[in-house]
Length: 622
Image (cartoon, rainbow, N blue to C red; front, top):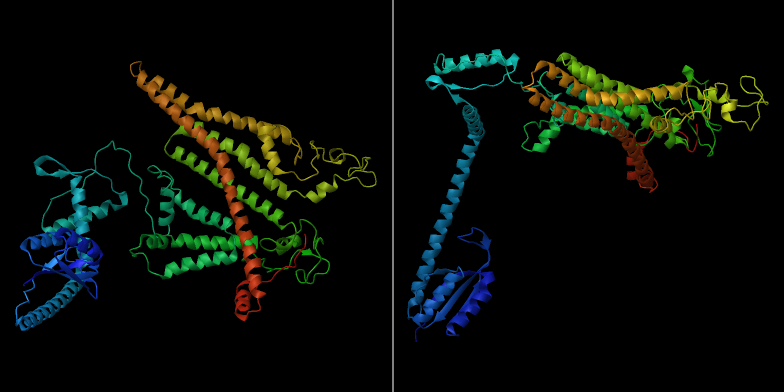
């Protein structure tokens, strides 16, 4: 009895389904055997390496052969012709076939290896020219893109209109002449100035490695119109310094500075990574931010959350040697080494380290950093308003100058610049002297009037400025600024005579600036167009005036709310500086001191080498 067979290769995952389908379709009239392939085989269709099995199916009928072939095709099995081996003496023929197939496989493998080597060699040669070819293609693509912007003119010529930087016009003409000479085409193209009038030109700023990052930073918020003052040079100064106010720490600022200097030494401008190129472009910005953080950290006297005792403190505690050495008991007050207001009483640079170890450290730095942030914020906002006025004068827009710039400046000065003046006034006043003027000693006031210990401060104060303190107690500026709008004319703790009436006048002037901003320019445009046009054109003029009024309404609301919200936003400098300082202190106390206390030589050496700085005595209060 002679049996036929089908041999092939099948995916291993299909084994059970394939075997079940054979049994059901042939009703058990076939015999299937499987053998696993030892290593994954690359599929000829998908090109992926998959685990395969070899199968052989024995059967007797031609009908069953048709069924088996259809099942193999349905399961994607690859069949291979195998000669019938049931006849006697076929073993030698099969061995010969196997030997021939092995030889063919070896030859095919050799051919594949040679082809791979040839491909690698060809790719290596092509890679040497890839950059040049890519540049050529990009250049040609840019040329064709520019030619697509041209339009047909007379006599088959192409004409295009565009803008060119005035300083580059001579260079452009030289390049055109050089191109004509290279191609031996005289007069094939020309560069001419388009007659006036021109549309509004685009804005172009010539940048260098230093200003490029700041220019991109400014352009994200908006590009100034043609010939307006470029804010980028001002941003190059203010942005790093404001970052230094927020991140003021000598140690951490040094880390940023060193990273910026490292970018100078490394060549990453041609990196394929967009983020790496962006960081390298900002290397000047990062360096200036690090330098600003070091400077402001020196002003704060803060290095990795620790104070630097670089100079002798102007405060002394009982029991402390040389000003800052030793320990004193908690609650002990510090005394100044010189009279108030004298040069000897001023710390040479920055904050006296005694404040960093006092019990009222947080209150002191909160007040100092908050007021400093407000001062620099108001100065920057006022600078922006001044730039608007300079632009208006340059372009001859006198309506904008008188009806927008001046009301904005007056509004800013009446409320926000006045707030800065109050801050400096509070810093400049000798409150020890003023508090002395509000005391009652031996039943006599400072100016010689009889008094009692139960008398009110405003009755004892010799200044007679009004309010609850009469001018002899330091005010709470936050409450004063809030009362300017909520309780005009009332000042509980005045700093100068007539403060209440002065603030009322300033508030009234600031309120008058708002309707001037809102109605001034639209009314000016209405009367100007009404006098310049006749009645036929009046409808279009009224339409444009209404649009201008809506625009002016939006700009007025944006300015008034922006002045308030931006002033509050500048307080983030204080908040982030405070958070950075407090987190650094937590890091010092919870990690560094814990490492030192672990009695591990490596930890102790590392902690001491990084954080060993002169420290002031602890638990004291200036």
